[in-house]
Amino acid sequence: MNKILIIARREFLSRVQKKTFLLTTIGLPILIFGIYALIIYFAVKTTDNFTIAIADEANIFEGKLAKKNDGEINFIHVQNETPETLKKQIEAKKINAFVFIPKTFDITGSTDSIQVISDKSVGLITREKIIGKLNNVIEEKKMLGSLHITKTQLDSLQKTNEIVFTTTKGVEDTSKKAGISYGVGFVSGFLIYIILFIYGTMVMRGVMEEKTNRIAEVIVSSVKPFQLMMGKIFGIGSVGLVQFLIWIILIIGLQFLLPIIFPDMLTQMQAQPMQPGIGAAASTMSQENTAMVGIMNGIGQVNWLLIVGCFLFYFLGGYFLYSSLFAAVGSTVNEDPQDAQSLMLPITMPIIFGMVIMMKAVNDPNSSLAIFGSIFPLTSPIVMMARIAHGVPEGVSILQLLISMACLIVGFVATTWLAGKIYRTGILMYGKKVNWKTIGSWILRKN
Image (cartoon, rainbow, N blue to C red; front, side):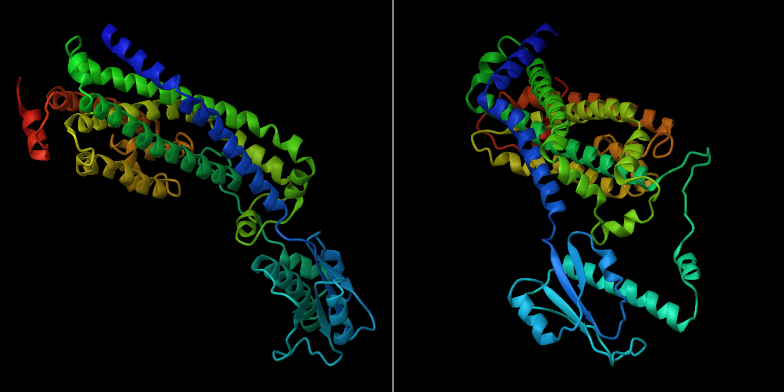
């Protein structure tokens, strides 16, 4: 065990002391923060102020559109204007577009259309906002005029009963909590997916370098091949864990700078209406609280202690399981690194398959496919995080969680034993191209 720790310490220090480690560890969170800040900036500044003049000779809109101004789409009602004079205002950059409603316009007719005239093409999002505001006023006008109902009755018809989801224990399952669980599950599973590839490949390349440079021949004269393999796995895994913890601390810490950098823009983003698609989903949420309060309530309903603890367990379990297999593949490579590509396919396919199952699990955490993927040790590090984000026992039962953890531990022990048998032979074998038949003979060899 002492020799394994010595090798792990060497692997850890040799990577941590490199300038590339500091650059990626500190630079990546800053890059993510910069991208996040740009997203907020452009989310608030989706469109410039778009001014539309309404020349309503038929009095269809009754001056109501001016009340729907939101700082992005602004309506102004004008009198005694013609299409020619309004076009001149567009040329003078006083307005961006205009709507001219003649006195002969029939609101009940299906042939009359409302034209929004501008000198330039109107973007899709801006176009949808304009159409929505015009249609809202026209529909209200038609209902009040044709059906002869009062404004109070119309408001009553437009109100819908709130639909609330609760569990059998009486706990409310809000839409914000479901959305946050979806996001947390997806991000957690995707991070583990990336980590398995990055650090597993790092272990494989480290083994390949030592073998092709003949360093392994010197090292195995003092330690056993299995100790060498485990030392590299623990050392590189420690690098990944430290780097990941620094990323989390920096990313979370940088978020507190957003209110300082964008004090006015964050307030505006909370107040502005959602874009099409997002607004449809947000309409099911509670209207009594502000957007930020609702999100904070949803975040408060997520068991973060459980998620962080399980993330560390499945991160380490998945890493140890796959890194031993990647190390075994690296030990079989000779002079040509391309030989590893054909041997990596059976290892990478379960990781990709786990990502596919995770896409199903974030939407339906209790489906049979999600349950299988969260228990099977080759896919559980990715899939289980998608289920845990929905809560215990709502997303995953305690029994299933314990079985999954036990299977992952057993899977790690089994793959380590399997990889050790391949590693001890492959690390000292040169000049022979290895295939899966050869690897099978190494596994079945008794001594």
